[in-house]
Length: 467
Ligand code: GN1
Ligand code: MG
Image (cartoon, rainbow, N blue to C red; front, top):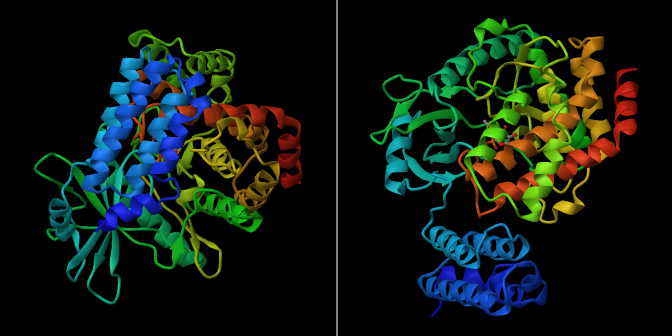
């Protein structure tokens, strides 16, 4: 009798048969950089692992990782030797079967998670803790309680390699929430701001015995987010949400917010980190890496455009990508922007650029075919229209002059960040397969190219949205 998990494997849209045919396909061999015989070794090794582990039971998500690994090794000749490619493949496959990857995010037992969730529960008993969302930095879980009201909350383990002073995040969250609750009350808006749920002994966070930093925040009911824009009305709502968010915090003194992540969105700093990473790590001679290096070199001067523009520091969100905007499930209206770890002083242009680079890329950050990635000006126009209904209240003429630069820069910057992390050995962003960061970088570079090609349109869109 097959186990339930084995059934999931065979009925998975990719399926074992798919992997086998993909691995055996001639296009794979000509891109893999090895000889026929060597490719077979990779193939046989992988399939043996898959078969061995299949007998133990694997699920669809794990199989997806396998697919990524297989297609990666065939598509990119990034690793210097066939033997190395083989070893890394096997490492990732096995790690994914065991429920671990190199993302440093796993390894917490369900028992521990339940125990930690229990320390925060605002009432009732914990009945389920489930991984949630697809954040690249922190680990997020949804906790379900056995009570009728407020029966869910969000539990997060903050990545302290990235956020070195997580207490500052909690401090900002308190300041921010108080301010926004007051503003929303006085202006009578339908807007939800997630709040901190304290531990049973009244603390904002919990540090477990392995020194992990945990915090809990309220769950926004009847709302959901999407990874890409669904239609133009969704685009307008995403833009509107960002305008509303920035407007709600526009009167907070920047001194009241701590800098939770030094250097965040300062593109010249990322450029410096990139050169460091190149110096410290060897072997950059694959076609994809060479392409990325040339792409960055050609835009080296441009990296300074916003930092040199004399724009004012204001409170910003820092990460207003499409899937951080919560949309009401019935009305389709935006009701909140979540992920408040990078609410801090910055340039509103970082937010505008981030919202558009994420919203106007219909194929998404993980687009399978990076060469097909493009910027959609129609979506851009709808996002800006929604944004400006709120943001007109606080933007100045100088702000408008740098909108095109912002959109181009943040796409480039994210590509640069992913690329640097690839060169540095995947130390910052979580990855699901070897080469994931390189792939993500190629997606953002392609998007940047498309933004550059649409310069006249985008400048025109900004002008007409402002008029
Ligand atoms: C990271 O973890 P997540 O997905 O919320 C990153 C953002 C990037 C984003 C790209 C603190 O955000 O800057 O735009 O990935 N956050 C941090 O998806 O670096
Ligand atoms: Mg984030």
